[in-house]
Length: 360
Ligand SMILES: Nc1nc2c(ncn2[C@@H]2O[C@H](COP(=O)(O)OP(=O)(O)OP(=O)(O)O)[C@@H](O)[C@H]2O)c(=O)[nH]1
Ligand SMILES: [Mg+2]
Image: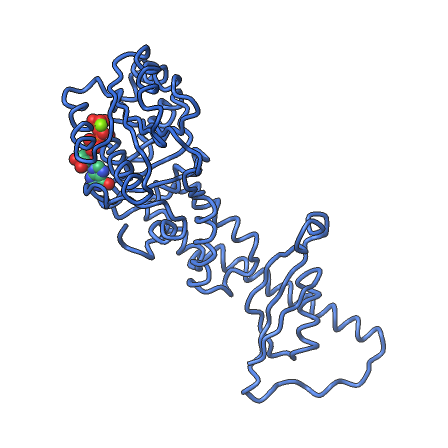
């Protein structure tokens, strides 16, 4: 097998070169649009990179070089070849439109089956289609790899900035805010040897303060309970020696805008805090969109997804990442404190979303 790459202006030019070079038995195995690398590439025209192969183990059907023909005959033959090529391309396109059984179609179905919103899935595949012109020459495996990279880019997983000192956690009721905060507090103290302090403004639910106090007692961390916005400066003062302060908030029904405004007024008193919106991977996308809109007042800047262990379909993570454009920093995978928490990893999550890996 002889494989060769050609960088040409268009497919027609490529076909001529391939036939001349590798003979009539050569087949195109991949073609894609490319630009010159680097800054100059931004202004240079798009070219086509064609990878062609010929099976050299079989007896070649290459006809001996024809004697030089007069220019008219040569032109006629070239026009004939072009016509043939054009009809091949047209029939290929028709086949694709009619059959809809190609690797792109299968990949699209796979994404939708894993709860990726259909419009988003179609957008990603249309982008791949544009980059790699010859779909049917790509195997399912190759399409999956390209797709994985596209998902990976869109997930925008990003670790916590080194200098982050105050982290607050907001989100709907029962998603796992307090549990996640306890996991992070323990990990920062145990693995990163940080001096951690806790604040709870969770004064709404009976027993909520006690839940966090229990974690604080176990780990020996100071905890401040903030009942009104007026209490906040004093709580921060008392934790002035702490390298990291984690702030728990009451889970609120996001439809109650008064509660959300109240929450926002507490958080507004925290100097340069990173606010995490905590969401459960089990929540329907339609509900998540409402939650995201209603919590916007709290100025959240990062995302945490909890309960990845309770679902098999992770498309929601991609939907929310694209919908908010915000970085995903942690995911949680169970109830165990502090173990069931991971720093979000785009590659691993892309595999989960595609169903290549089964469990979080
Ligand atoms: N399966 C699973 N359960 C989780 C996870 N994280 C938290 N939980 C459970 O979810 C339930 C609610 O957790 P909390 O941490 O109290 O949730 P919250 O968001 O603080 O709740 P509110 O303060 O009432 O809004 C508890 O039973 C947790 O053990 C997770 O990653 N996976
Ligand atoms: Mg809580």
